[in-house]
Image (cartoon, rainbow, N blue to C red; front, side, top):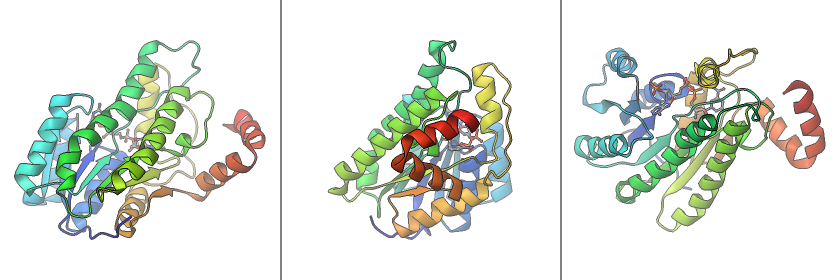
Length: 261
Ligand SMILES: NC(=O)c1ccc[n+]([C@@H]2O[C@H](COP(=O)([O-])OP(=O)(O)OC[C@H]3O[C@@H](n4cnc5c(N)ncnc54)[C@H](OP(=O)(O)O)[C@@H]3O)[C@@H](O)[C@H]2O)c1
């Protein structure tokens, strides 16, 4: 995996209207990158552009990652405005809460569609541009729950485990073309994510965000991993401990998660 400069790199960030994606756009622009920011809520993107005043270095496109035409518009804008693409960040993601048995099939379908299929197809479609890029990189935002499964979030875990598998396979497959793949696995982060996961599931999100990382801290770690050519980062000490425990003693990890997960 190559070390790379962020300054003057050309980056697409999906899910840029809030949380980690928004913070990542800010961090990249501050470090001199040119960014195409994508999400569905146009007003949020307009606010971001007004705040950053980055001129031609920031292009905001309102679109849905699950729509092929919207992904094509983002790639075309990046090529036209910046003359190419160096990094695709598949960050857009949604959650779901509650037991699997009583949930509607729509919940599983929608979560897989946004978290896995859209990221996979965006990657495939971006490859022709990335092959011409400088130190090209794909960043997939997974989760600690893509390493360790917990109850009540089964569809989300399935989507993030699958995204991890895809990332690991593509890292090897694309290495011969000089395209790197970085998998980022955040643990709890203070964003709109849980509120919205409750909405998607038709229930009210409960639980504490105590100890959650700030999106700005997550963004800083992602930028550093991009620069240093890391293949994978698991954010937070707790996240690393859980992944480690699940590897060396799965029954103990399951017991802890059953009790406190
Ligand atoms: N928060 C956590 O604790 C946590 C932990 C581990 C991993 N993660 C992962 O981190 C990533 C970012 O989450 P976050 O915490 O920043 O949550 P967030 O604040 O809810 O942000 C999610 C972003 O994804 C966008 N998005 C959702 N569906 C989309 C679609 N169909 N098309 C385009 N954009 C879409 C949303 O924008 P619009 O609604 O405007 O489209 C929003 O900008 C996700 O992949 C999530 O799974 C989060």
